[in-house]
Length: 134
View 1 (cartoon, rainbow, N blue to C red):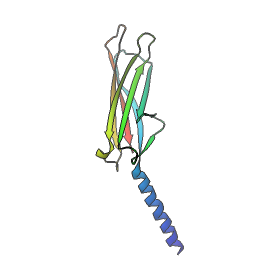
View 2: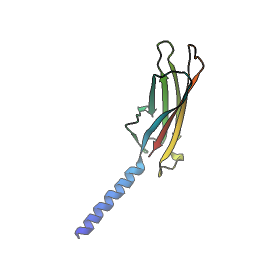
View 3: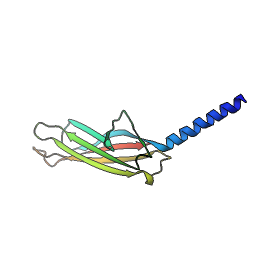
View 4: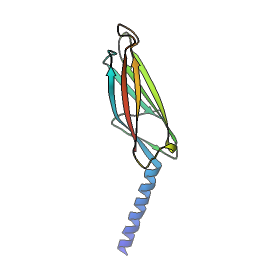
């Protein structure tokens, strides 16, 4: 009788965990890497939001599938300069109904920043942001 109760409790916990994992996803910022920098600058800042919530490399964001069926990921990249600050951004919309949520889903977003003044005006730098949905 004791084993039946333990088995029942274990089964209920397992079903609850499976149900919870299927209803919740996490978005992780895996890495930010510079692909190239053709004299645009070296004082960079990065801002990443998912559905208008800030995402950092050190803290994942969780979303309930019952509350959202799309993710809007915006990456912004800025190079600070006293005279000519340079900025660029990119947005990716992910329809969660079109991806396999039973496996990790990896994707990248690239941002190209163009130098807007000075002797290197027109030069570009490119950044790659790598994400994972789990």
